[in-house]
Length: 299
Image (cartoon, rainbow, N blue to C red):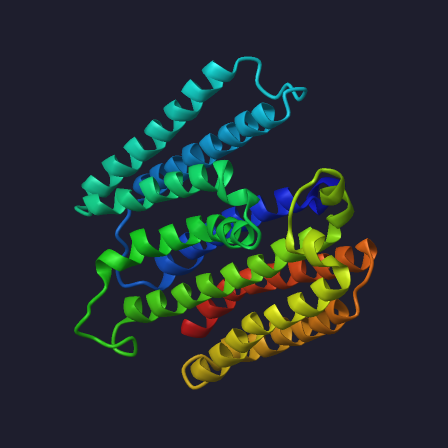
């Protein structure tokens, strides 16, 4: 399907699949206890959806104010009220659910998410590199929220991860989330390189438009070593406990990632960056599927 080739839809689909696999494919199957009921989990998802929708509405407002000829919203004032309304609704739902599990402070994560979206949309998206970092953080926000809300209330600080299943799951999935963050960070820089000519026409400042594609390929390849180091360290560290997962990471993720870095080092044209972006998308999907492998290994 051609529509699935669009990066935006791919990313949204990856976010949804990751959260559902963490909740229903891992935590409900392996965890000794989870904090949220299914209804509370769905309400949390609804809260994230409202806050994300508010971000999209605000982005449309800002773009229309910067480019008045683009009629995204018929009425800017009403759009601002709609933005405030969906944010209040999203944060309100998160407060209700957090109170239900006696973790009222957790709704602060949702307030923080809404604040970051506001600052990103109005200011940070124009700052080189910070734009990439914050956008990658927003993509992985839902995954971290799921890990925090479902597992953190059940952790036992007096036990090690080897003695407590939930402690082990929290440790592994948190590192998994950090790895996804870095993979998406590399992906945002790849997309900047891919669409460099378009950004130049629109006077958008990125690392690619500032230094060009030649330097961009070298810089992105070097930055790409960060996820590689994390993957290798993860596989080696967990091999004694989780050999199946470690072998999967080595074969299905690390080897394709090495191929990606070689291609990226030699990339020069938009077509080259499109290819490397597609390879990275596959690697991200394989990383998400590692949740299923982890389930089988733990069982």
